[in-house]
Image (cartoon, rainbow, N blue to C red; front, side):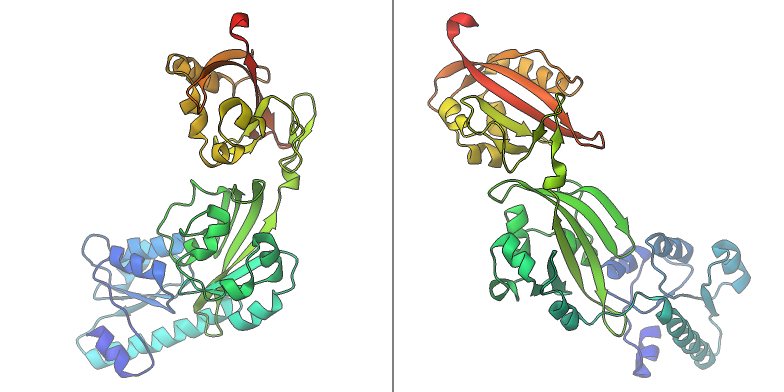
Length: 377
């Protein structure tokens, strides 16, 4: 009934929800100018709804529309600039009060919104910026793909503009799946297993990503933010990429530097690899193909190959070593049997050192494997 009455004025478009959970789902996927909420509702009441909205960082105007006495509402909400309209027997007067307060609260809130952004103008102005940038609209469709993004990915703007269904994630994640930028518009998936050092502040998320879908693994700092139209509705989102691989130069215990761009062991006959903090393989020397039969690309793409190569009788010992190797700057060498792709069994002399960033964060370990003649084991 409220929807019908408000929309009769031709000034409002109203969505309704039968519970707080339904309303929160709507709020997460669409943009609104105001919320009108009853107090008594199935399951969770209006107070819970209001506090949840505010805990999300939203300042959207919130109006209680209830038959409950005003004083009872205000005692529970406390100082909060929330508006209140009490339902009365005279529906015309009641809805006139509601419409008046609704217009007032929306008008008062507009100056406090993030400055409006014209998505087309922004698309044009980002073309020549040094950081790689792309922009999507609310349909998750690419509307801008700047020159730096073209250079980074090798994909032209002509190819990418108009792409949807998460195709913009392929250069960084290797497949079509929701990207960090999509989380702003539809936050219904987990980002913690893909991104690191995540910081969420209002309509902006900053995070780091290690992408293995380039010639070398690359580190990126990504910042994504919502974009608002001239009427302060969400019109899309922008993603800004900055490669930080060079800043991830690592400190070995002997103060050597290790770079994923120019690995110092590249000409070594030993099989050497860099295992990251999340057990991803950030670098693998070309000797892996000679020693194991598996190419560096295969091992980087599927790190489980390393574990599967370990002889079944040595896997328990391998697991224990993996745990112990994180605890000390120096680890005693170990001998393990591995099964090559050909099926042959060989012994390797395995040695690893943990590596740390300048801030002391654990960044994985450098591993060296040398073939050992059977009579020396």
